[in-house]
Amino acid sequence: GGAPSRTLMQRAGKAAARQIIGRFGDRLYPGVTVFAGPGNNGGDGWVVAGELARAGVPVHVPHIGGPKTPEAIAEREDALKSIEPTGETFFSRLVVDALLGTGFRGAPRSELAAAIATINQLRASGYAVASLDVPSGLDATTGEHGECVHADVTLSFGALKRGTLLARDCCGEIVVIDIGLDEASPRVDESLPLLVDQRWVAERMPSIRFDAHKGQRKHLAIVGGGSGMGGAAVLAARAALRSGIGLVRAVVAASNTNVVLLGAPAALVSEWPDDRVEIKRDIGEWADAIVLGPGMGRSREAEKLMRLVIEASRQPLLLDADALNLFENDVSSLRGLLAGRQCLVTPHPAEFARLAGTDVKTVLAERFDIGTSLAADLGATVLLKGAPTIIFSPTGERLVSPRGTAALGTGGTGDILAGIAGTLLAQAGDPVSAGGCAAWAHGKAAELCAYVRGTTLEDVLYALPRVWNEKEPPLDPPVIARLPAAAQ
Image (tube, rainbow, N blue to C red; front, top):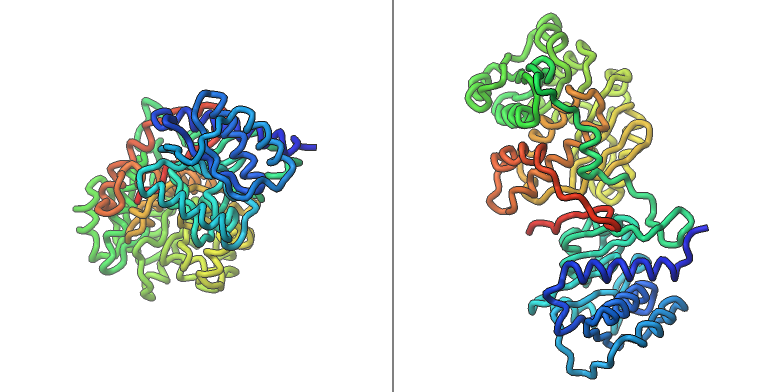
């Protein structure tokens, strides 16, 4: 049996109050306004109100109906022993949103809708807003919302909620607090993929010894760069070099060899091979991993080459962009070609839809689950790009990387991801680790650029060494995860 819900409510409220005091110390006086709703989220709010009052903070709880659950009623009674009545003239610079929690669906009604509108008006006039568990009005599962609170920080209890990952712009910074949930507790979030964070990445990143030479740092072949699209191969090669590869070879259409020599002078360059002998020599016997597809195009020559490269090599393989479009609606022939080798496929939602024979709307609506069957069918790891990025292993493991900003919503970012993941695939040979680490690093690099408008892929590439080498400060218990506010 899990912890009783009132015990969890008290743990959640006390931990949230500590976070609020620690973060908003400069705003606690002249006071804090706590908007407490009728359910258990409101109960959490009453615990916060009581804790703040006992810490000497003036607290005002506007009347919005009243608590309806036994636990929330009990916490209200308890808190009122400590809260000094403030009357109607109350000044505050901080709002705690405890109106609606994870059980909420649909549109807020009457006084709750009015309270949400009030909170957003207060925030617009300079108040800070801390939401408990989820911003009120946000569906914790789907992320759908009409009128919902826009928070500066969301204090999420026990687990990240799917909805907050899909509506990051409403949540501000997300801080996940351990409140001792276990499987039998009443408020465990429905199964979410495992979160990729700095610790997960650090445990899986291949180390580079002090005396490592370029052979030990591995070789990556990038096959792509069809007519007019040499830049894709350049971006992938530069990302590989900024992720620690020993040697990278860009295998591109003859018209693009100079483009690559100029854009990535540290890369080796080969023209698209004509036959299996050349493929074997320049790719099959040379590379530790292969990235296939960036900027390939859909010409018959490109399609023939892609099939030949897959058939004539056995190394771990990353398939991106046109390499996936080649197998539109044809999972079975791709599975046959892969024949059980280590493989990572990295579709965006439209490429996923084409490959799996579905539509983009379905992919987006079911993004946390939809890749499970495709990964099993292919026998390959599937990285579904997006915000957030979800990684599915052929054995059913699921990972989520929520890092990144809309700066990545521009042509060429997929090529950078391919170069990062290809490097890690070459060095570790494991598509799941390569996909998870690459998605995290790619997103973190965008976050380090600080801005969305005006950030270019050049900036993202320049940020990569910082991603690999600068550590985020450790989390202080009971915080178990922290996501920065979405860059606007």
